[in-house]
Image (cartoon, rainbow, N blue to C red; front, top):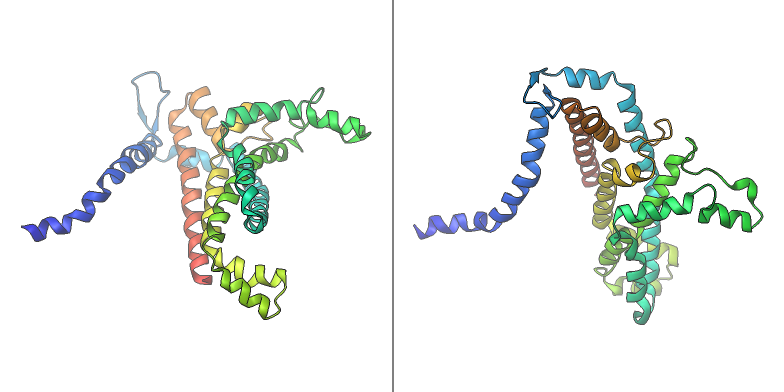
Length: 290
C-alpha cells in the first residue's frame, strides 16, 4: 500500500499546477475549438451548427490573411529587441558590479509598465502636430522627415512595432544576463591566454553557451508577437485602412463588434495553430542543430 502511494507522490506535487493549467488554458482552448463549429451572436441562446463552415470562410477571407501577414512583419521587426537585449546583457555583464543593478532596473522598467500606459505615451510621441518625435525633428531642422507616424499606412505598423519593442528589449536582456551568469569565467581566461579576440570569445564561447536561453527568448518573443493586441487596439485599432490589423484585433472585431462568436473562435484557433506549429518546428530544428 505504501509503495502504491509512493508512486503517486510525484503526481500529487504537480496536481495544483496541472489543475490551474487545465482550468485557465486547456478548458478555454477546448471551448474555443467547440465554439468555432457553431454560429452564435453571443446574445441569444440560439446556436446554429455550421461544422467547418467557419474554417472554409476563414481560408477565403483576405482580411484574415492580411492580418496574419502583418503579424509576420511584426515578427521580423521583433528581431531588434532580441539583438539589443543581447548587446546590453553582454555590456552589463562586463560592467562594474556597483552600477550594474541600477542599469538593469532602468532597462527592465519599460517591461513592467502597463501596455495601455506605454501605448498612451507613444501616442503622444507620435502625434503629428505636437508629438515629441516630430517636434525634435523640427528643432533639428529636419522638417522634411516629420510624418503622420500612425496615420500613414506605410509607417503605422513599423511605428507600432517600435513602441512594442521598446518594452521588450529589457526582458530579453534580463534572460540573457541569467544565461551569461552560468558561463564559467575560466573559459574566457583560457581563450585570452590562447590569444582569442573579443569577437572570437563572443562567437565561440558566449553564443554557444546562450543557445538554450536564445531558444527561450525567441519563442517568448514570437508568441507575444503573434498574439499582440492591446497596443494595436489602443493606438490604431487596426487602422489606417487595415494597415495595422493583426490577428488579435481581427478576432476582437469579429467576436465583439460583428457578434460572430463562431468565426472569431475559428480565427483564434488559427492563431493557436500558428503558434503551436511554429514553436514545434523551431524547437525540432534547434535540437537537430544541437
